[in-house]
Image (cartoon, rainbow, N blue to C red):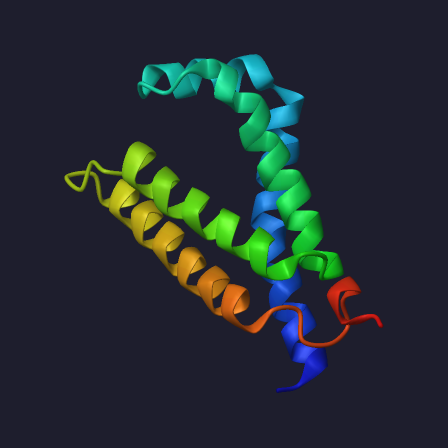
Length: 123
């Protein structure tokens, strides 16, 4: 496998989580309110944004890649089921499928690890 392409793939998968986590950090009360409207305790905004930001950074630098990718995959599937289950709304179905697709990429990354160009690869 091409190490540069693998790194680019890790970065692209990580970006959505880092950007989303930073967005939640900018307005945690708003995010907590949305979560509560969907039946999720608002206090979970803090572990959610921590997972998104720190998990995303871990993917970029290749640190504990298998664990970070698996945790983000589980999170993506849970978010799809909890927040995007209204299939009568085409946008929600698209977001559901997007989350499942991201989870698929993350599961592949969880299986492969960082390969090269990551902290996990240093000796």
